[in-house]
Amino acid sequence: MMFTQSSIDGIAKMQRVVNRLEGVEMVELLLNDTAHGPKHAIYVANRCIAFARQEGVSVELSYIAGICHDLKHHEDAHNHEMLGGLAFYANPFFKRELSEESRKLVKEAIEDHRSSLEGEPRSIYGRILSSADRTTDWREALRRCESYSKKHFPDLSIEQRTERAFTYIKEKYGEKGRAKSYFDDPAFFEMKKRLEVLTNDKRLFFHEYQRVCNE
Image (cartoon, one colour):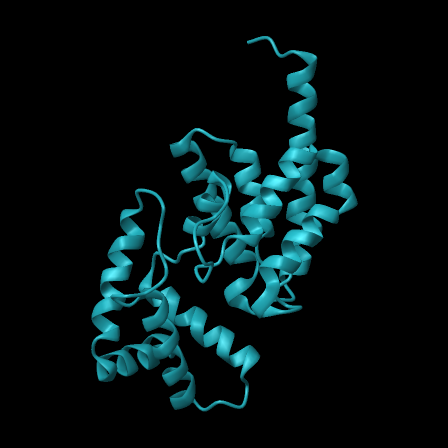
């Protein structure tokens, strides 16, 4: 197979971007609670790649959005998507390496990724990132709640953290929960069924939450 100079340049550019994401951005992600740290970013990025291939759109932009979506969570958890989108868009490195259109698509995807978003994401990349950001292991969903509570509400008792988790999980993943996937995602739908069962029985939820979080 013959590579053109433009394809070689494109490969080199993507390698520079990947090196940057695996360096500077990973260091910043370490400032987040573990539920929003490097492990989660890599998990989301891998799911972004799968959905991008499924939909026939840019794997590269989807991967970048997946790694960067929670970068500013440590600064303001409630507004991290807006802060993160703006920070990505203004970043001199990405200005140099990516086109204006590509940066805008990633920025909007980051801004639109939260399950609490009113309406739908503005682009296919926003739908990919939002769907990829859904946990597919119900136990991991509980552990992420515990990690978040311990960092942001350190004075809560285990009973209070469990009560908080019950309310959050029910609002997000219960029968009328806001979390959704825009694509064929069997693992997510199976997990959601399990959490619907748990959030319909508060005593069972409390038992399973404390058991899983103490494992």
